Length: 67
Image 1 (tube, rainbow, N blue to C red):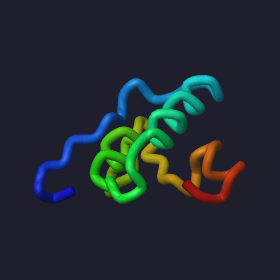
Image 2 (image 1 turned 90 degrees about the horizontal axis):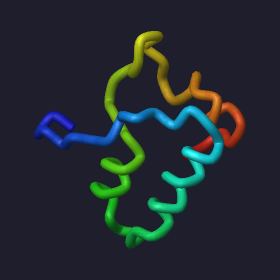
Image 3 (image 1 turned 90 degrees about the vertical axis):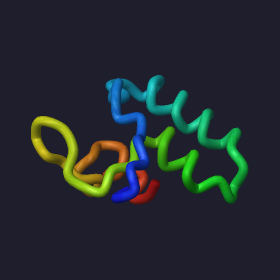
Image 4 (image 1 turned 60 degrees about the vertical axis):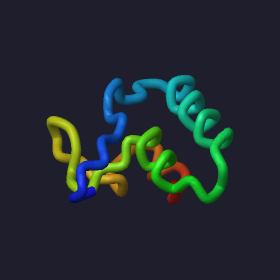
């Protein structure tokens, strides 16, 4: 992250349909392509958004308990 990896944080998936589309895109990637998975999934190494939420506070994490 410190080396400048830019990830796709916008638009944030507002519905289950949008979130599922991201998951579908991630499933198409090679299992070892970690960098592409981080970019598509919008991975950041700091709290994100106007509320400064973390993964543990995200509604998707709370339901699945993993990403």
